[in-house]
Image 1 (cartoon, helix red, strand yellow):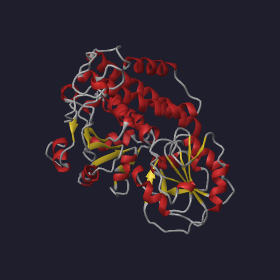
Image 2: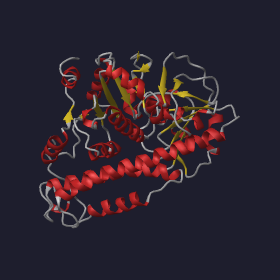
Image 3: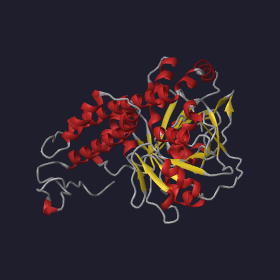
Image 4: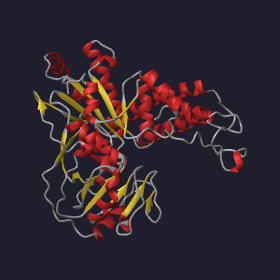
Length: 436
């Protein structure tokens, strides 16, 4: 547990003129300060999703109004009520669900409903552009502007799910995905002589050997890196032509993504029969924000140890811990199902709600367990979204978020049965009643 009780330095009253670390000079209690921090993290993540929805012309006045009210509640000498801040956190979860639904609608109505798609992880001969981040609009623009030029487009990390959208996959020069989660980029970008486009968050400070061929767009900006404010990527394309051509490198590994809500619902009857026949014992959602922490190896080991009568849903960059595994099928249903980007957590939510309706039970009565990894603010947004729906028994790791103190942890454990990951085999045995 984080020993520092609080840290607040947003006004001139701060202790010693540097920051209040034990109790606020204004009277703010440590738990109030941490709940305010949590609220800011949650609405930061929500803002990221809202940004991409607005890129495509989709807005929601209720979300906008909540963001203003929530931000104002963290202002100096406004809200000292810890109970109200918990309610605001849950309301931020409700608004996060609403925001993710807005963005998903924007993506589907713009690029079509995702379809299960297999993606190569190798390079082909010729010039290439590597697109990282989350911005589908930026990817669509670079695909259109490089059509017929002989330049191939590759995705990295959270851009992998773009291959599942018909409106993006229609471009024949969208040829594959390279690398895994966000933190491999320095090594990966040095290896491949192509221009790189960073479209949103999850960009790292560059190395010297590829800085001159790295471009940012949208909210992403890096020192010493050319920023493109709009969607005209002609300068990047010209830079690409000066890079050495890639030589084809064979790789037998392929990845599958694009499992949409409609795809899963089309299998609802079959899923119900398999569950009732005992062929599917349990569903797991294993994914979230990946991190380079050593403890994150837990998630791969967890999935590798799962019995063969279980189904694994995954999403966000946490999927790169497991999406190269061959888990096989259960009567034609893949045991590993990639639902998409971190914002596609809404797909997982809607699948859970649909399964609950299918079996005539509450969500917490389903044979479903969420095992989530977290790294940054979007993960906090998703967590509160799940809690706002009353979902209990979530396993979270690889470490406890530092803003959680003992008071907050007690509330989360007592009200939502939030659990920290431990040993993979022990957790599986606990979830499956000792029958792993």
